Length: 134
Image 1: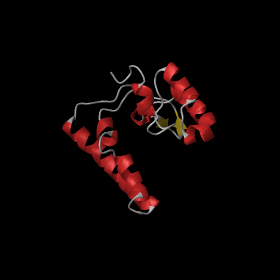
Image 2: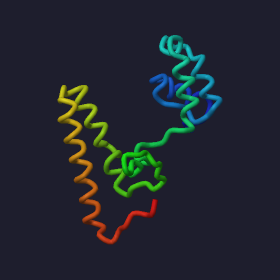
Image 3: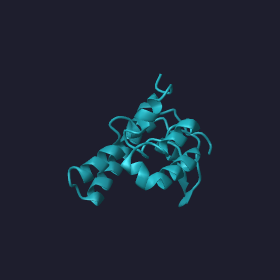
Image 4: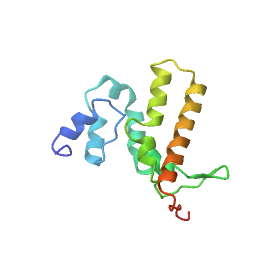
């Protein structure tokens, strides 16, 4: 239903450039939408449309930094939804910084602590689990 007619375009244009439509036909329409933001930043939106094929959800990048190098992992960690779900730890951290005025370093350290706690709790509940070979 959401992907039919002009519903997807109207939905995506509630925040132009933030949500990238999965349909190329709708991506093209976002570039000509009647919006002051689109008028000023159509080049940005075009870049987002071009890059969408190379993006993924943050949970897909968990475990991808090994030895100081980014080596993409296609194995979704089983605790990913606990970290990035609703409310997500990162989203909450960003809100605490921008809306609550919390010191970014303090907020970041607290978010890392919460993520480590989530992982440790999950592993305690699943002691026989072992990560797949990457």
